[in-house]
Amino acid sequence: MKKAFTEFRSMLRTVPPVLLSLMILSVVGMNLLANKSINTGLDWLALDCGILFSWFTFLSMDVMTHCFGPRAASLASFAALGLNLLMALIFFIASRIPGVWGESFVEGSEAVINRALDGTFGGTWYVILGSSTAFVCSALINNFLNYGIGKLTGQKQGFGTFALRSYVSTFIGQFADNLIFALIVSRLFFGWSLLQCFTCALTGAVMELLFEIVFSPMGYRISRRIMALRAEELRKETV
View 1 (cartoon, rainbow, N blue to C red):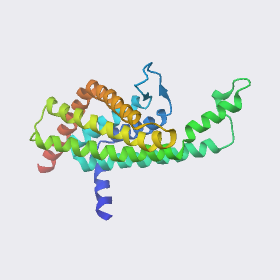
View 2 (view 1 turned 90 degrees about the vertical axis):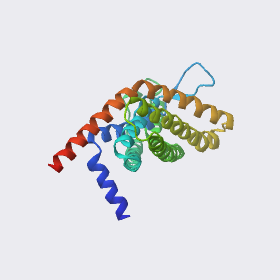
View 3 (view 1 turned 180 degrees about the horizontal axis):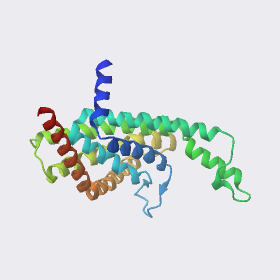
View 4 (view 1 turned 45 degrees about the vertical axis):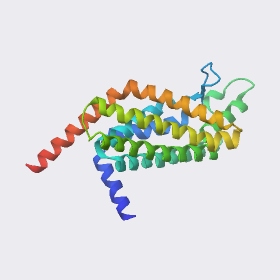
């Protein structure tokens, strides 16, 4: 326990605060916006608005794994999950406080809209359980797979290696995230078939991969900047 706490403190000191803060924000935003589905016009493509944030969550983990290793990236993921659960608790308390949401002032529908908004922000226990379990599993898969691919490539530097590590780990990690959530929540509580769970997981992973492809050059530049700063810090310490 003491070792884990020491590693956690080390992670907080080494990972840039802005990157860690944005990752935490993306996890909170991802889970909140997951309440809204996207009308794609295609029956086989099931997506939600959480995708607007989730790509950054995985890109952040890829950058952290590249710069600090999979343990630090995983600890950062757990910290983000813990703070997300805290935010979920605060949202739940807010949903139980008597009052009226500003957007509920629609003549004749105030009570219905107010209950709907309370339900959206208050969350449902099995959705929070499913999303939390899925995120823990997918984060570990993503981080250690990314690191493993890096070991296989001999820790070569360059965008090609960074892209290969990110694309493979993101696709498999996102597929695992989507599938675990679908099996826990969609199948158990909404009666989805195994085919629907698998199709949803696969199509969602493909869309997440497309986001990763678009934004991976940004992630590579961030990782290079972090590595350069770390090298400069080490040079100063040795002088």
